[in-house]
Image 1: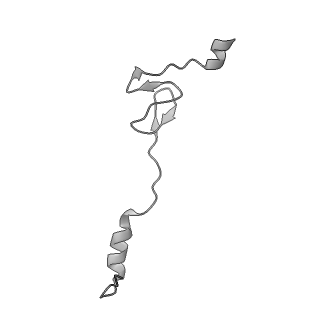
Image 2 (image 1 turned 90 degrees about the vertical axis):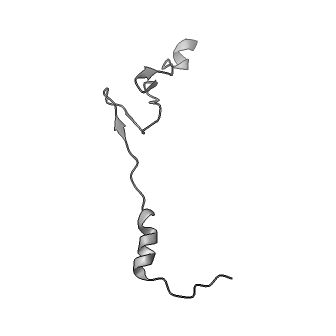
Image 3 (image 1 turned 120 degrees about the vertical axis):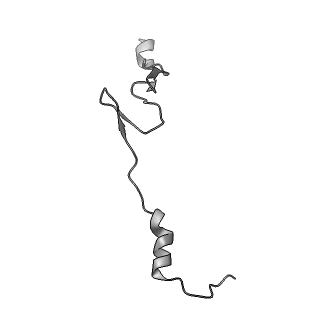
Length: 64
C-alpha cells in the first residue's frame, strides 16, 4: 500500500486543486438572439458557422 513519507503542505495541496473548480459553460449569443455553446450547431436555427446545415422544418407540419 502506498503511504506518503512526508505530509503534503497546504500550499502544495491547494496548487493541485487549483484547476478542480467548476466553471460556468461559455455561451455564444447569435445575431438573431439565440444562444448556443461554442463549436456546436445551433439547433433552433440549424446554422453552423454561417451556413445552413440542418433543415428546420418540423415533422408535424409535414404530416398535416
